[in-house]
Length: 435
Ligand SMILES: Cc1ncc(COP(=O)(O)O)c(C=O)c1O
Image (tube, rainbow, N blue to C red; front, side):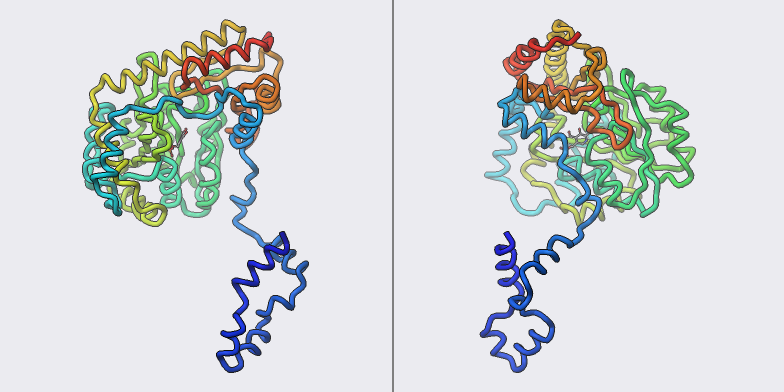
């Protein structure tokens, strides 16, 4: 490896003999500046490479439990209920639209804010489904997935030293992005079984230095929807501290039992201080598409667009065209999607309960949680590692979604899978004695 490194470095940095000889004194100047790396001992170059420092937020990140579990799932040919995506290929007409748009549509850079048809469709869709109105020309932007929208919002809104309220368990991208933006995280811990915050926990997290609260609702991984009274309490805290709210609402359409998603921006006083983030990947169960949307008042959108400009600038136009078509589909399409996921949720939940597992309620998302405490399990990571290695079922330990003082007794399972996949998982889980 040292040899390869040396060769690469040597090739890139040292002027060729021809170049050196072509200019008077060039060889001498190169040597004088110490550019002749042949002269340096390999051990020195190796040491330099090892000592090089990178950005501490990212270089300090260890391998995530998601990567570890996926690797273990492959190694043990496990039934993978850890991965958060459906194994259904998605609506054929929406995919056909994308394919047609690749062949006959525009394949060059689309407008930075998103193609006009999609921005109009987003505006119409959210007015119809959630009663919120955003101007397609000034208050809506298309991003490359919700993740880009979150990163862009944090980079655009946070000044180094600003405090950011985060609710744990949280989506794994939040904390590194907040830190990279220079934000100081202030955590609100949510715990099973109800995963709710209290006035005391918000009081402890909010301060005069709070710039924004990053709020995920419906919440992954708890699979819960924030009750209306808690939403009102959060709005009150944001207004009282003149804080912004960045709302990750990617699961807004995947809600069950007739529950409706209420966006925080719909609450009195919140419209002008909220950034609403959505994901077509979740709305249409096409998670690989990475088409996201941001909705925000014009003044905030102006700065969000600046950060988007230098992160990705645009999103594939053909996927945007297909998403515009999909968002205008009739209500029955979205209800059908919810009903299908709800049936899958019930199938897995009932199967697990039949085996004696303690299943927590799932109000939305592709996930349900199993409480391991009644089984005497207090280390969810060790349990999930054993589960995949010895029983061939991959799950996600929920402690992975906490930065500090994690809840260690919950495992998350994805039910957005074919019946045969859920049956195979249940059959393997039946070999475990829960109680
Ligand atoms: C809460 C949450 N936010 C954001 C994302 C990422 O969305 P996208 O794939 O559109 O970037 C996910 C994906 O699972 C998620 O669960």
